[in-house]
Image (cartoon, rainbow, N blue to C red; front, top):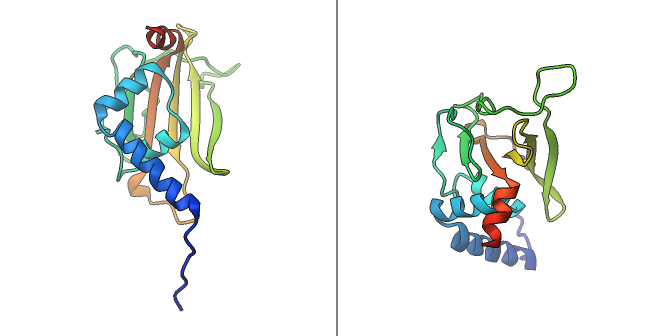
Length: 164
């Protein structure tokens, strides 16, 4: 027997949010402009991690150039496993060589939707790396589409750019 789901007001608001995101972040140029000035909001991250809506191109190689504020990379974790080996000098955990990462779960409408990993630079205290991946909902994880969004931002440079 087929169930019908009642239409809720939140369904319309989700569509409105998606349309607004497409208008503001619809092109890769617009996304990179935002990345240079601020961290992304949770709903924007979810939009960028969605393979159907993201305007970003999947990066296949790990960057080896010096890290710049505003750099934004989208990796397919199945192709690029060592995306965190970016050549940056990140604060390490005590008594080990592992990078210290702060872990967070970002919520939309009270549900955990994004997993975030934050690292801080050893050389420049205001440079940070944030990596995000979408958490699966109750359906099984589709390993063919495991995207990681990596965003580098120097907070002092971003605030200076924003005030101009």
